[in-house]
Image (cartoon, rainbow, N blue to C red):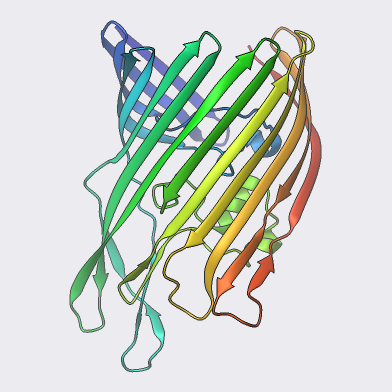
Length: 325
């Protein structure tokens, strides 16, 4: 038996296209582009095209091409996926022996092993579950050195986390925490100010002061990036037509082995929201929402003139309407 799904977005955007070969009872093999195994949608935040606290509190593997084994194992669901690698351009620098200045080096990428992700969601009851997840990616970069020789550097990325989705009658509690090592390399996190502006509503005037979450390599020393995230969503449904939800997302990043006079050391971000989901008719929803984005402070090491920079904040209020056919 084969199940399939096709989902197409506006602006020539292929979102989901996959098929599942169900080779035995309760087990299948998914092939195509779909949300990766580490993705669990726990927040209903609608700001910025249904941001849902993704990558600012909640883990997000995005939609990638993959081959994923999935099925029932004991009281829960297991997913193990081989996912298309993400291979961004990283900054490789070395000190020029002639001038004594840092110069950007040319690199090439070797990518043979797919990104690996796995998750297990255990059901405690019909409306209660817990989940654990993890992922690993390794990418080798070949470097052109000043003396004409080649060298290489391997950048490893990994993540792990856990969460719960608990429903108590008209109330629910959803929470998740996760850790990342070089998470932006594997596309589990935003890759810097530009992507943060596009995804989280950060004003473009602020992005110039935001350093990348990608690691850098200076004089063969890798400045690895460590990221911690957590989120909490609370909800209450006083009637069948109305659900109230509040949520908070937190992200903290620090950088290993600073190598320069003004290296980024730390960055913290927060996001809050409060919404009401009103079902006007079957499949017709109106969702007013109010929220606040604190883009946090970035702190530098060895930069006495201005060791901390405030990236500002954003307050928003709006509403979303949605019709499900």
